[in-house]
Image (cartoon, rainbow, N blue to C red; front, side):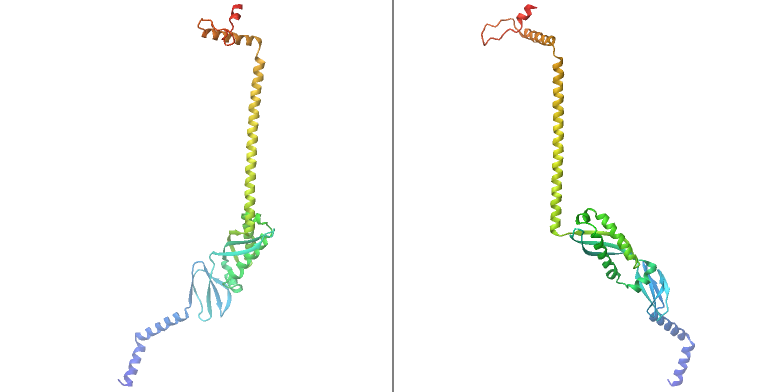
Length: 281
């Protein structure tokens, strides 16, 4: 095959379907290399950079086109995230307090570009953790150690409100806050336990005293009622009633007598009660 044949073949390829295939292939290669589109996933926002400069527009979820080479899209997660942080502070009565807190937060979607520009993607370490430390110290300094335990819900609400105001300045919204655990010194915990034990003993003694008082009042009431009954009974006793009781006793004795007089007299003899009285009648 000479040069003339080769030239004829090139001319045929240019005029035939091979030319179209080469063009399509070149276009696909360019698309793969430059990738002029971007897909924003659920719960994400796209930060547009023009030659590294952050733009005002924020890309929402879905498919978007970009200018190759000139534009770069940075993904920012705006879903609710959870951060657990250990904090240390002191109470108003100078007791050391260490606690573990859990914070649910999210980046304000429309301000994702501002957060990226001013803070970056390491906002937990740069903003959230220091904010929790400072707010916890400020709030706990207004409560005693015992109040931190007894008013745990109120302390949690106050910390959440303070964090909400503080983080909102950085375009971070607080969704929920909770105190996972409080820890105090061993000496303080032993003192709290001893106080609780003493209070329980005092409460038991108070209840026992109230029970004894009630029982004494019941005894006095019963004795008073009995004395009143005896008093009323004595008021109802008369000479006629006494005589009637004697006659009733004699009649019962006669009913039981077998008609034989006792043969033994003296100190050991059983008297026949009331016979003379009946003869008098």
